[in-house]
Image 1 (cartoon, one colour):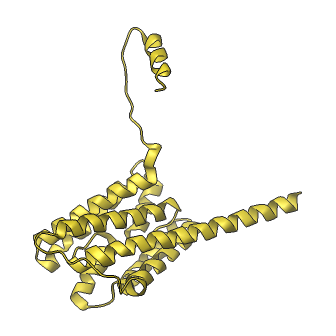
Image 2 (cartoon, rainbow, N blue to C red):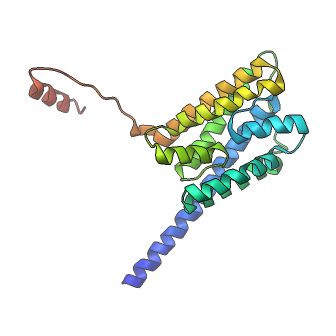
Image 3 (spheres, rainbow, N blue to C red):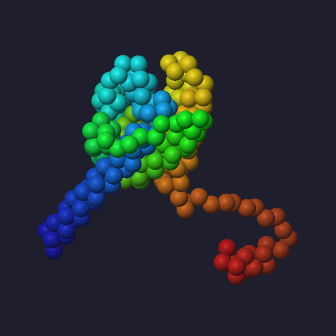
Length: 234
């Protein structure tokens, strides 16, 4: 019986790994779609390593996905030291998927070029897709590398701070640095909008129904109030 149980547990573990891998690749693909179709073509640096890579790609003409992989190397090393191996293996899958999707898989998909104030649409839709992709990857205990690794490290030691909040603070700093390259304040503001949308979508997907509201009621009739609330299924 013990041998069969171990074999069954091993099979379930393999199934979970396969499912996690497929979902992480899917999430990385959604993230890459937001970058390829909306942020990168409009010079929006949406924070993190992707934002840094977008700026460098604009200046040098190097492939965006390749830059994402190269910049990630020292962060991946730090992650293997400070985070668990399971998370980092999933992160390697996420980084590889994001890089390949950005440079090769999605390269022929049409992009949205903002015109006449359309940058706000690029930043919102880019942020929605990137946030959705990151939320999906986070939910499977992985990351897409970059500042996601920093987010996980901070979240490990400060779990009371939401991942979306950490992401916003770090990514907003990178977005602001884009001004020194693009010399365009509008592009920086669009980047901040994109980062904000990302953070909200991440928290919605990762935490979802875990949030609630706390109400304190001061009364001389606590029992009556409690019974009434329970009858209302509160």
